Image (cartoon, rainbow, N blue to C red):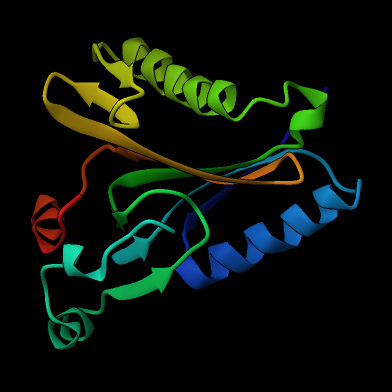
Length: 172
């Protein structure tokens, strides 16, 4: 019935991850409410469960000099860049109140992003073969979710006006 929306501005990745873990634990215990966390991160690279570290093209020394942190996380997928100019959304939902279907959930996230972009006059499509939302051959939004006991976390990153040079640091 209800969803709490938290619009947090620019938040370090570690802080946002800890907040997600706290809300996920509450939802798994049957407490709290479904929550959508919206924010931006300072530049950061995250490595999903299937990530290969050689998909980070910059050296650890260079990343440190640039102030870019790297985190291994429990979501699916490979390496992802997050940074200012990117709207990041972390839906924390108990799917037992919706539909217990991982594919449906990921497709639904993609469809929501397609509809939002359409409202802004941007024609896009969700692609299940390359999970994310695409404008032609350009990926405008990444999707990477984790579901435990039917509670979702992690989510999406919509590129609004990011520093495109930072994408050159990875093989997305």
